[in-house]
Image (cartoon, rainbow, N blue to C red; front, side, top):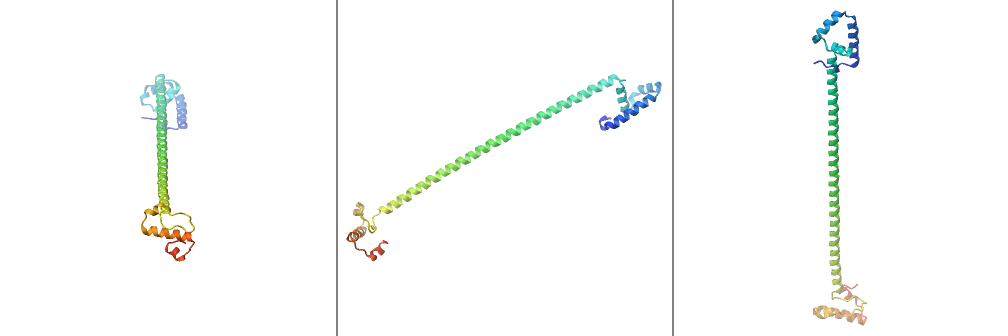
Length: 191
């Protein structure tokens, strides 16, 4: 079917102007004959008739069709805008959900890091306490008495082996008598 929209506006106006002049030059009988055989007339002549207002029924029908088309176009445009709006809202919701999930993940990671840090700190403190205890036991262990110390023989020495008792007694006696023997120092690791 012929579609008037494929012609440019300038070309359509030129054709209409030509037809107008053509009809003015026609005599009445020829014009009537053309009106009778309007079914075979080209669409541009039909446009001419409507422009001149000679066929009000066709003109009004065409206007109705055009109005209907415009209305349909407006509705389609509105539906398209609504679809775009819904799509945009969904996209925003997805992004918001993603941000919330990311926030939760960051929070969980942070809590885990803090928990790991606290656990590591507890282990470190426990290790430090064990080390301190070991050092304390080492210091309190009955063995030689450092030179120049005024420490008396501890009670634990009484329940120690005879060798340890002998060494401790000897060290104490040497310390009290003021004898400084390098050989003794070397043998017992006293510097």
